[in-house]
Structure formats: structure tokens, C-alpha cells
Length: 137
Image (cartoon, rainbow, N blue to C red; front, side):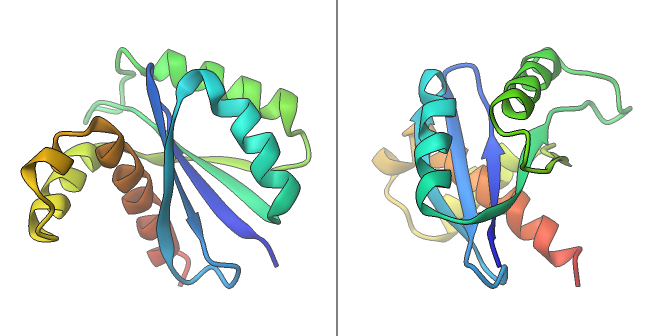
């Protein structure tokens, strides 16, 4: 059994979350510079069994593309090229950054830590992954 990894892909930073091997709980893994996205995943996949890659796809409420949609679609093309054996699915990422900010406040995270954009990215990835898991029941 492999994990599911979820990616909140951004122009500068990419947040990553992952499930436990039983695919019950989503946890924040890390935030990396987007330029290190593929090398990071190669290293991670070499040590961990991952059976599915989820990536947040930005859309407007009317389902039209946002300014970031094309960038994420290019990232999906890279993923397919480098990891042809891994299935890739997109997940809705609308409002996950806002939800991540609210979650950090509710968790009692210090303002200084909440202002670190990387924390928001990996928590947004965790929210997307946990929502995906909730729909698999």
C-alpha cells in the first residue's frame, strides 16, 4: 500500500502534504521552492511508496481558468513526463489558502509563523488531501 501525495503548486513555493501508508490521515510534509519540485519528488518517491499524486487545480467559481491554471497544467505535464507510472488527479483548490490561514489562527500559531507563506502552502495541501480522503469513504 502506498501513500497519496498532494501538491499545492505555486509560482515561487510548492506546499506538499502526504497521507500515512493506510491513507487515513493527511499531514503536512514540507514547502519547497518550486524550482526544486521535480528533484524533491524523485528523492521522495525513491524512499516512499506513493500510489497517487493529487495536485490542486485553481479555478474560478464559474469553473473558468484563473491566471494560475496554465502554470499548474504545465506542472502536470512535467509530472507525467517524469513519473509516467504514477496516476495524477486534480483537486479543487478554491479557498484552501484562506482556509489554511484560518486553521493557523485556530491552532494558536503565532502571528510571525502565520506570516510565513510556506506554512500556508503546506497546510493548504493538507486541507486538499484531507478533503479528498473524506470523499473516498
